[in-house]
Image (cartoon, rainbow, N blue to C red; front, side):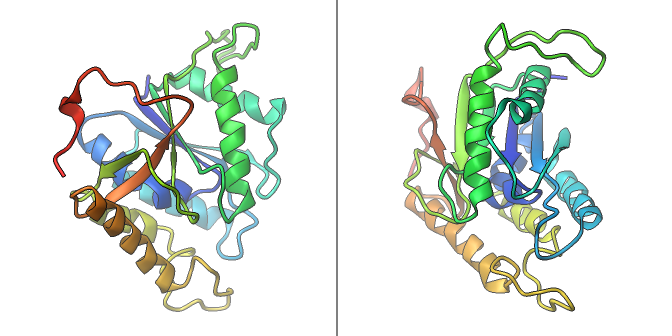
Length: 243
């Protein structure tokens, strides 16, 4: 099965924070959307691997994902080398998406920037004939390089190239983020520590940011993205939204 878009996250829940409103909107429009998490988030201060797997499954259903995979790379130990690039290249060649969305290159959590560099390089190398990979059934895969690469925003703000209107899917985004109830909007932390992201104020900030970027473009809510590597290619100005 080919996918129209794959979003990558360093941890389960990164794509929910950064682009789940966009993913839900595209899924509702009939696009085939996938998410690939690089790690299981096992070094997080709250939750367990099993709990976060359950949360990811719940969130995926809310968003309408066709595919969600976890590559099982070591949390807090993401490095940009060939051994970590190969499983990403294999998934890109398998699903052949037109659009790939990365975590931000600069962010509060070091894993996010490392993941961005790792996936960005894997996207490029996926197009090289002499880097050979095999599918799950042992067949040689053909090289493929997605034509469009974007990055989503997490903690550190940036000036976006694109703001996607998520006014109709903001409630889905809230539910998808809250599906990770060990991590976000935690009213009662129990025996686990209160963290930067578990504080309910963090969740409110997420909503406020979507409102701010939406307001700048004439939407109620928006998700900001950067377009990577080159100017944005267009063939018609009809794609420009009224604002």
